[in-house]
Amino acid sequence: MRSLVYGLMTLSVLTIVSVLMLIILGYSFNRQDGRLEQGGLLQFASTPSGATVTLDGMPTSSRTPSKASVEAKNHHVQMDLRGYRSWQKNITVQAGGIGWLSYARFVPTDVKVETMRTFPKLAASLASVDRKWIVIQEDVAVNAFVLANIESDTPKYANLSIPESILTQASTQSFTISAWSRNDDRLLVKRTYDGTKVEWISVNRQNPNESVNLTSSFGVAAVDMQFGERNGSDVFVLTDEGIVRRLDVGNKTLSEPLAENVAEYSIYDRTHLSMSQSLMPKR
Figure: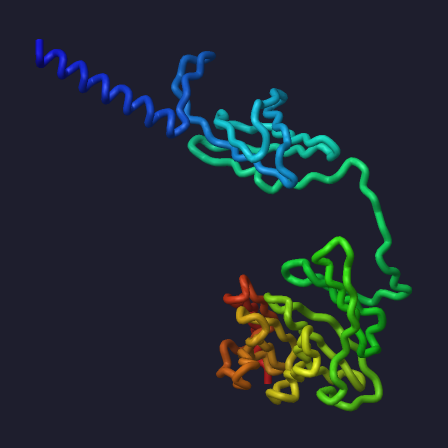
């Protein structure tokens, strides 16, 4: 009798633990076909939060942020919030997988458009990495830019120009906005002057007097330049000889060739270079 009782207790514990593990892993009993199937999990979040979630046409009781256990198949999700337009998405959930719908952003039903500032001419503009700043260029031939701080509902504007003392004297010139540094403190500007001559300038947004003419400072003729990982302190350069080097702006050093016979390159995640090489060596 004692062995029987202990055996039943052990079996009961094993059964309960097994059932709980199956529930944790997302398994459920499908009454339609009588099979035990593994489902998945959907995570919901929205900006603003507090939206209702409709899953496959059936409203759920919770509001964002929330989650729901679902079958492993394609699902239609709709989120609604009073005063905003509906947000919809189709998503396929794999067995044992998690579907993330945490990027829903609601647009107001009545969008109010307000003109903050008008630019009669607009040659170019470029938003910073974190979208807090926009540099605006009205005339490519003029050494003048407008910085717009868009962190708040009311943008703030400031004028920016490259110190003439670091620019090579020229009869004609044009400026091209190339890139922002990762921390939004520096701008990389390409200046073309006297026809085909080129120089690159790292412009300090906060203190323009600390801007650096990379071409003249390092004595390198560059076809292309791109900011590296250290917030504008390092710059990768492709020379007119097809060589990729790294400029350390802070220490004023130029690295040995990282690659040769390069036709073009790009930077992935500010740390890795992707390059395509020319079949014929450049001379």
